[in-house]
Image (cartoon, rainbow, N blue to C red; front, side, top):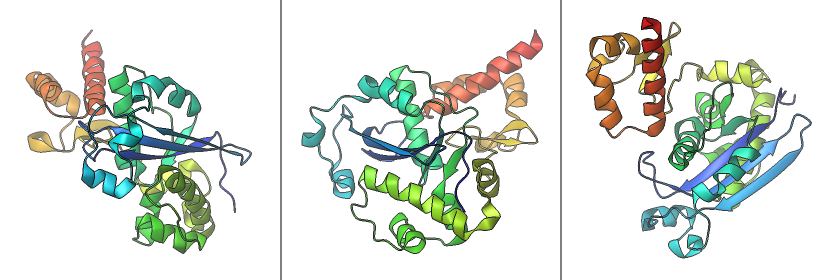
Length: 256
């Protein structure tokens, strides 16, 4: 059984200065693009984060300040990356909670429009954890019967992730062979923003945190428009603020 694609899917893996979407930056990106015909194309870039890389992060991925001092900033290669994954669905390992949100934040900081609307977002870790509860290296060993050489290297991790998804659809017929069926199985369709401050319930965006948790975002903004200002000034990811603004604009248009 092989993965059935309606359009290419790009498996993405990032190495970063840390895990805070609002302040940390990418230091390496690797992308493995799988075409409808099964062809594969790989792109890898070291990125200068324009900030010091903490030793605790370098100890994990092996990338130091010295290694990236002559590398381009994300803004300098943003258009190149965008073109490589243009018209692609996106996949990765823990990608829906980290890699893709971080990538979107970097695009927003660079002032380059990058939309995930209409794209299928396949998180291989989600399938794995629902079925086996392991790590990427263990997943690669379990599904592909191989040892992951170069773990925590972005290119090795992204390539392994692509192989794991192929093995998962062979092992679990119940998840289907299309990106639509896998998304549905993993329950990722209800996400509004990557930080999950909002979720979609009965076709409406609702708050997923704080005093308004469970309430319709549009209803809250109508009753407390100052809540929009508070969130826009707060330490929320740019993607969350972008989605909040979209909801606010839509609400205002309904009044016209």
